[in-house]
Length: 189
Image 1 (cartoon, one colour):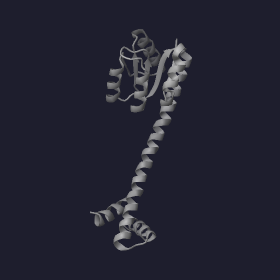
Image 2: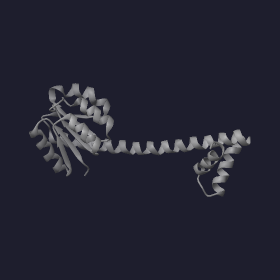
Image 3: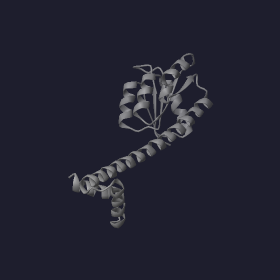
Image 4: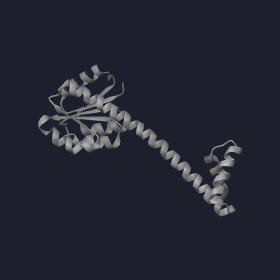
């Protein structure tokens, strides 16, 4: 299993959560009692799961959950008292933070972990797909710039420039991106 970070203002709460996570398969657990320390730890290590047991030593914890959701790819569960769970959920729900009320029902907590893991997995897949698309867009922009250079300097039409790049890529057994880079180094370099 991946790494998990437990952030709890209560030592007893920290132990209970650690025992549960250990039984669920998380072997690499780290813990802290303060939000500021959790922020520092999140910058230096990668965690799959972060559980915040409110209140913390230096803050309540909902601001921390928002900050962590914006700056990490970890799944985040926020534990708080039942009487404020709905209000806290309203504040953090748009950030993908799962709120579980205390006292904790083990089955509900187990389901929350599974939901957060599934959501994180889907998010990481979408992030990877987004990165691939951004690379493809950059390549298409580069090819478009090369076409413009051919149109401007060699008086090609857009379709002639397109065919030229395609043919050069086939003839030289290189990618359209490599051909575009050669064209740009010739005419823009």
